[in-house]
Image (cartoon, rainbow, N blue to C red):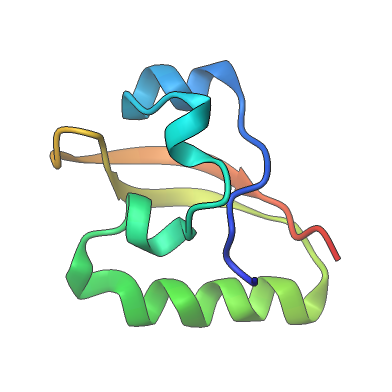
Length: 79
């Protein structure tokens, strides 16, 4: 489904503390966004998918321990 994490890199694992098995096929917003940001995250992702255009920017994500952090990331739709 839209929002499912398909691929990531080693830097992602080091930043978030999640390994490949914990990440793959999980929903982006459920894994990485604070609950209060889920609606905004879903809307942003829907826009990225609809426009079929990668997005790069600064985001606030949570790591495996639940701590928030600012990251600069590229999100690319696979359609």
